Length: 135
Image 1 (tube, rainbow, N blue to C red):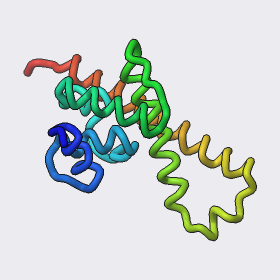
Image 2 (tube, helix red, strand yellow; image 1 turned 90 degrees about the vertical axis):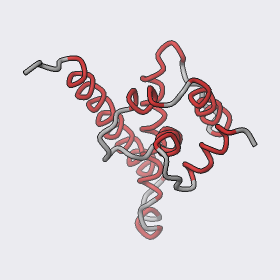
Image 3 (cartoon, helix red, strand yellow; image 1 turned 90 degrees about the horizontal axis):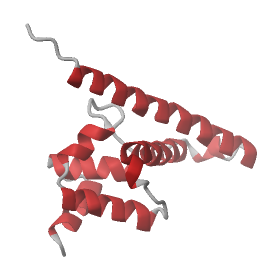
């Protein structure tokens, strides 16, 4: 198995390296409570691993990430995955009380909240990175 495929699989299974963790977070939509933004995680991965992450997202989730606006596309993907993960983390008894429309509304609300948080993290991190004041 190729090295980068192993990196992704190890990350999805809870591996410990930064590359493993970042590739897993980007694919699964987790890690919003961490300090890194999407662009920081993405920049940490080398080009071949970046391509493998995109390949997994596109083949497994049947999504096409717009390479012209990569960070925006990754934010959308990560927010969608995170919203679904949070929804399915609810107790089955709680989820079974929702109608299909209520379920869609709940997932959409979670998506919007997560997307906003990831976008704010990008703005915040970019602001900190590019507006460093020399002491």
